[in-house]
Each structure stands twice: as structure tokens, then as C-alpha cells.
Amino acid sequence: MSLGMKKRILIVDDSPVVLAQLSDDFSEDYDVVTAESGEEAVEILEDPVRGEICFSNQFDLIITDLMMPGMSGFDLADYVRKRNKVNKFTPVILLTTEKVSKEEARKHGCAAYFSKTDKKRLIAMAIILLSL
Image 1: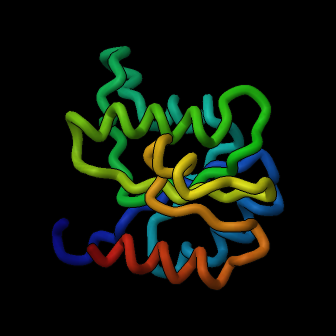
Image 2 (image 1 turned 30 degrees about the vertical axis):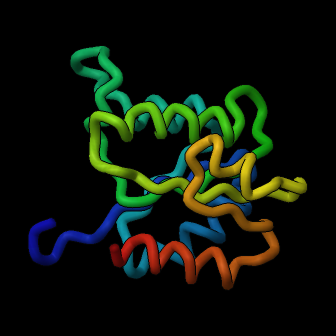
């Protein structure tokens, strides 16, 4: 990372309110990109020029909602985990209102998971992951 460049976060949620809140929480210190669906997140991550999935659009952290229409947060985390084998490691934090076990989250490659109501812990974990 060159001097002066902000680390990049991709935030994925089908709720415009959650996207706006999290974007506000992080945008002062980080370069934030938002997506309203898992499919839109994949489009952002893919290389549109070559039509290949190559993670050309690099992020330092991805925060995703679990329950979204179409591609779920687990589906997106699986996608990222498969790409992490050939690219730099991009941690995924899962946000959910559902009951999720640590084993289930880890199985899908999530670095952490938090309730949507636990924003303080989410922000603290994001800062830790972004400082690595």
C-alpha cells in the first residue's frame, strides 16, 4: 500500500439504511464501496474488461449481510474464499439477524460474524482486520 492510500471496504446489504449507516461509520478513514446485493458485489469484484473472475478490484475487507434476495452472504463469502486461494486474503465479516454458529460461519470462510445490532463490536473487529 502506498503512502496516503486508504484501505478499501466493500459493504454489501440489501437495506439502503444499513448501507448508509455503515458507509458513514467507515468513510472518514477508509475508501468505502457499497453493493445492494451479492450479485452486484461479484460484478464489482470481477474484471469487466476481460470477462474473467480475477478479483481485479481489490478490497481489504468485505462486510456482507447474510440474508439477501438471490445470492446470500454465505454464497458471497464462498465466492471470496475460492478467490482467496489465488489472490491476497480478503477477510469477510458477516452481518446477520439470524442465529449462526461459529462453525457455520467459518465453513463459508467468514473471518467473523456479528448481529446487525452489535455495531460497536463490528467496527472494532473491522479496525483490527484492517490493521493486519
